[in-house]
Image 1 (cartoon, rainbow, N blue to C red):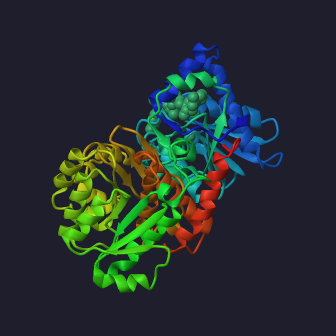
Image 2: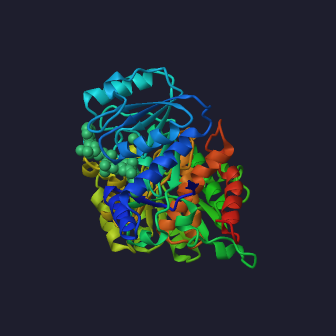
Image 3: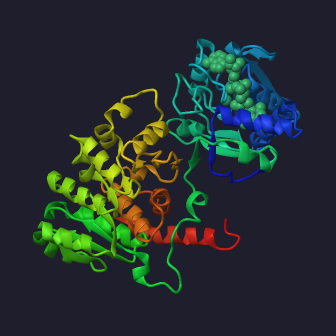
Length: 491
Ligand SMILES: NC(=O)C1=CN([C@@H]2O[C@H](COP(=O)(O)OP(=O)(O)OC[C@H]3O[C@@H](n4cnc5c(N)ncnc54)[C@H](O)[C@@H]3O)[C@@H](O)[C@H]2O)[C@@H](O)CC1
Ligand SMILES: [K+]
């Protein structure tokens, strides 16, 4: 088995079937694909497994089960393998006879991408027994019970330590809660001809550097700070100044050449005591604001973190969008439109219809898009995509599985980050990092994707104990990583 960092495209059932059909048309019979998949599973399973180890293999009625049977045959050469069958097809024993706690490894090959409904009682009982025991669990393609298209648990579902999939990932590997059920995900290369992928439709992408690296603007050796843009972060009242300051620091560390904090004059003295590299500018009256907008050098705005005043937020947002300037609307700027989201959608439709980035978390998303959020039939990917199409803005639907969606239908699912990001102020930082990419001239979808990835990566780089203020300081490592990927031969 050759294992590779897989490309970013995510497939649905139709994509997998299309890939299989193209592989067959190129001369690789389906039975051979199953053999390769099963051998790949066996190879992963055998890693770290002592000779003679006890292995239980669950085999379902479809091709997921066929993969499992091949893996069982391969593993039987060195290990003590018991095959438990569910549905059609032979096995040593029926799945109902499976007992927990007797195996070094359990391989779950009940259902993969073909799962159509919740697990039936026999499978549910086996999953319950498995969870009660201490066996290591390796799932084939998807943990059985997880919907590959959405990551939803259709009922009981296997919780795997590792999951091995083939060639390209599925949406359910990245969206929660499916991602958590997978454990460590291994993408096995089963030798599909590389040229088939041009004809295989993908449903979305994993948000990884190869998705946006070529579009990302970055400081050049001959460059000047003015080449890297000038971001403006609006601050609100004194007592909320921390949020805007965080956002502004993140914009600076995120790569903007210059960052100005535009704050009510009464807040300026407090802010000036705490910022050094940031520029400060008083912004109370409409004249102040108009002066900012007239200066074309201010090319990316952050509105919302710690801003407070909803009426003022709506006014500022309207003017920035009407002026066709890039803007990240976050926190209070999103809430400001909670009563009448259609006002925001109208504004976006009238502007450039693309340089607006909305960064709602779940609650804010519900306020802006109540009907989409209330449609239980939509996955987070579908919800974000439907939302982005409505205002004609890039929507960053935040969470452990942040989805970035563009009005043209492009969408990416993020997987960087740690649970420590669930703390006050991290959203403010994200808004600043995204604005930094916009200020540098990165196109809006790629700017949002790169910002989300960098934010998560910074959290990973810092590690446990993270608070939001630590994130800007962790960004240099992330820039170094991106620079290494950009270097010849880097990725
Ligand atoms: N290109 C690829 O990715 C390849 C994928 N392969 C495997 O093929 C699998 C897909 O095979 P299939 O399309 O046969 O799908 P599955 O094997 O996932 O399951 C489909 C079967 O399960 C039944 N079924 C669905 N939900 C059920 C439920 N809740 N209770 C009882 N029965 C249920 C269906 O009627 C059908 O018979 C993948 O998951 C993967 O393991 C490999 O074999 C070959 C290459
Ligand atoms: K499975």
